[in-house]
Length: 138
Image (cartoon, rainbow, N blue to C red; front, side, top):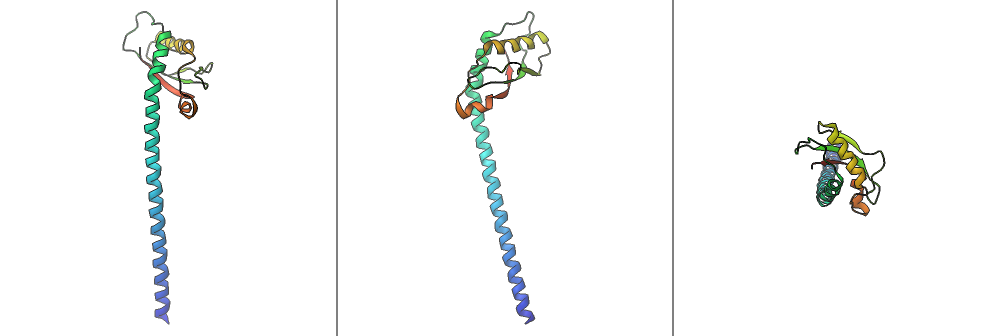
C-alpha cells in the first residue's frame, strides 16, 4: 500500500514537472517570436525613415537661411510634431541637442516652420512622424 502511494506521488510529480517544462518551452517560444517581431518592426521603421528623412532634410534645407559666420560642420537635433499631411504643429519645434550656436539653432527652427508642410507618408507609416527627432545638417 505504501509503495502504491509512493508510486502515485512520483507519477504526479513527474506529470507536474512535465507540465512546467512544457509551459517554460511555450514561454520561451513566445519570447523568441516577440523578439523577432521587434527586430522586424525596427527594420521596417528604419526603412521608412531612410525613405522619408532625406526628403524632409531636402525640404527644410530649401527654406534654411545660413546665419553669417556659420561653421559648415554644425548640426542640431530638434523634436517636432506633425499633423497628418505633414503640417508642423505650431509651437512644437524644440531643440533637443543644440549646435552650440544659438543663431544656427534658431535658423533651423524657422526653416522647419517655413517648410511646412513636410513630406511624410500616409496611413500607418505616418505614425512615426507624428512626434519625432530630426537632426539637421546643412
